[in-house]
Image (cartoon, rainbow, N blue to C red; front, side, top):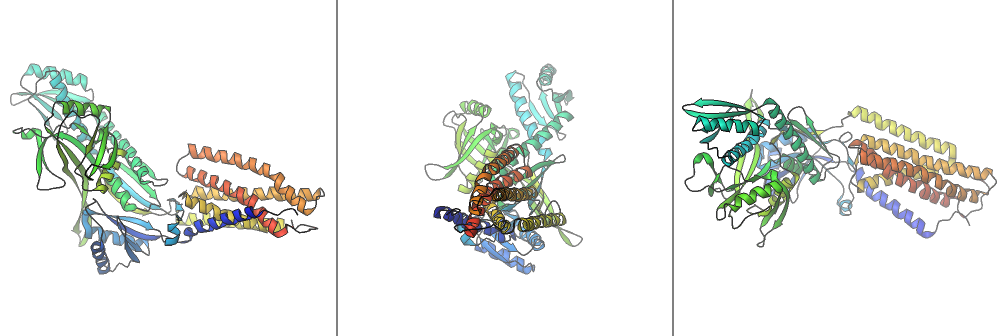
Length: 617
């Protein structure tokens, strides 16, 4: 008899349907508003004692929370709404200070058995569900100062190379560099040399207390170039760090002269994101000072692992984190954490030249962090948060140079595997050209407005309902079967999107609507062909078989051309356009399966293996 699927095809369809239901199910569980608390360094642990302090403080402030839990790296406190979440953040931040990161988050409520098999909810974009929004400010003063530090070292080196002896190089409060000479003749030669070598400076000659100076000041155009470079470099570095975090469809863009907006939709570890994005960690490699060396040429620092130990190191920098081409966390022969460093070509040359002349001396690795401290001050009887910037410099390694170092070596003396992994990530993602500070942090609601989204979703639902009614009215029983297949298609589409951790945006919903139309279009082609075969005199069973078989080629051609367009959109587009392309591509595959195999299976169950005189189509 015609129109009977073999057992293996029915089992395959049943397996796919069960798969779809299971992996689409997590989307039925809404997420909780939550705070995520984690240490700024690996030595600051989240444990039962910390959780008890936080819970006690929240209860004292009468802030209700749903539950609290500890994970390997952080503590999570859940709330029933966003207002309680924001109030709790202020209270917990004040309680724990700057040793811990308190970040806004959205915590999943998916049952554990679904998580155990890798099932999770589909991520929603900022325009549908929101996410975490960070507004970061780039410290332009430090950006210019850091470039001036480089210029100071270069000018010293080049003057020595040209045998133009100077007495001192001084930094002015106005950002100028003054080079002091003993004679007018040497000063004039140096002035001409610096003017030719550094067109980005305004060069003048001055006399002070019998000494001769060459004073150089950056031009306004150069300062603007430095600031633009700082923003662009920080944008690139932040994008690299976001990519390391694995956040889907993030937004990282410049805002105004010195600010950067970062929006992370549907992230699961907001605390980790805040810590990695805001970390302005950099390294400097410097030689230990020789005994009796001038204080103007040296600086004293304590060790990061032992505040009681200190060392005096030279101010001149051999290389910095900007010269790091690659960094990888590992362990040494004693099982202690370390970071394997690979320098770029210029950094390798500088390291080789300096260490070649300094065998037997000790070289320090200086770890530098630009941080902010939150202080609460009373203003008109209310506590107001005030952000205080400060810089922390610590020595993490001080080792004797045994031989000439090239572009590969290792850093030891780290607190633990967590710190080595984090340091490697920061160096690998690229150094920040200037420190960045968190100006604002908030959860982002639907960017198109709740009312617009509600109207958009309503229109989608009305359109979908009208399609179902049309199919039912025009094709009767076959239309009912097509509608069932269409609902199964949506379940499968949701399951695949969830399994791929794809992010659904409003353009993605447009892709779903288009997919619905294409799935119905395929059924319309099949049913029209069945009607045509019946009109040509074929018996019902033969008409069903011919309708599915002969419409297949047309359906395949139409879907392949649409899939090609979707692939081009994905490769050429960005952000929401990619979201549309992904949804459309997945929808094409699932609609092909449901429109052809599932619909035919349903028709087979309804009509297959029976003698028919007519069809309800």
